[in-house]
Amino acid sequence: MQFMLLFSRQGKLRLQKWYVPLSDKEKKKITRELVQTVLARKPKMCSFLEWRDLKIVYKRYASLYFCCAIEDQDNELITLEIIHRYVELLDKYFGSVCELDIIFNFEKAYFILDEFLLGGEAQETSKKNVLKAIEQADLLQEVF
Image (tube, rainbow, N blue to C red; front, side, top):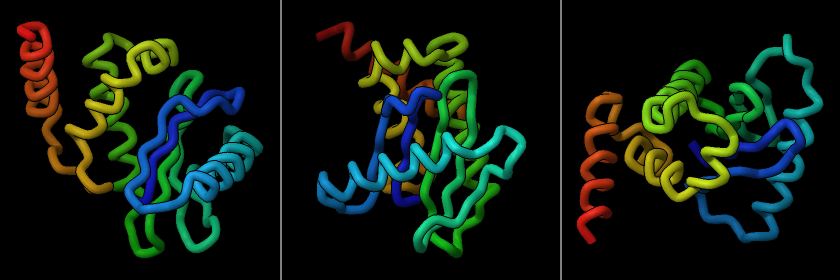
């Protein structure tokens, strides 16, 4: 995976995670272009699209779009499953996650993503193990 973007139906970026080195200018350009492209698509259209030399995989959950860019040879369905697993982790942690949870607890959303993905690859597929690691980190934070 090259990067993951979370944005609202209004096109507001809520979370971004880049796994390839790019300049800020290039990141902004990519983000603007992709948000416009995805938001312009109709709800019944396929969640995969070819863009530049990448494949874009996205899914809308409530008011948020989860959008990932993957290499041409990567599997779109696995990426869709990664998106879904991340949403499940957020749901378990926040109890039915919503856009406001991401806005006001963005550091926790990033932490959950980092526990789940490492360098753009799933490092832990077990929801239970990821949630246990997050729980332990929360306990550590309370101590200090």
